[in-house]
Length: 127
Image 1: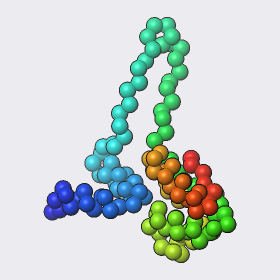
Image 2: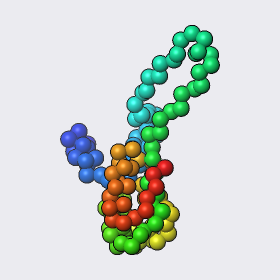
Image 3: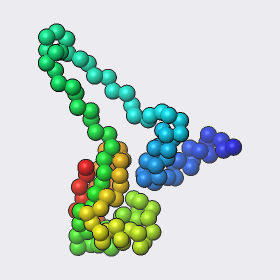
Image 4: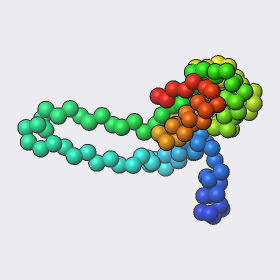
């Protein structure tokens, strides 16, 4: 059986996409959720009856490649870095834009991926 340290080292070496898949499998297997609980204060008095339900803040985002731009090779390299796809798979993804590069990732990871891909010349949309 692996030690906690070995498990943590393995997780530290995973890509964002692999971590997302691991999280989903962990939640399904153990029947838990990794989402942080959010406390919402309800208004008091007559205004409480009129209050609309609070909209939950979105915590999972998709990074969608909408176009490769002029620097297609740089975009393919960034896609490979972000997803650990092989050269052919990354090229196919870029060629078939619009296509999601990362799905159901945290906002910080989505913004970071967007910045990297746009830096390479790609047109990106975060949904």
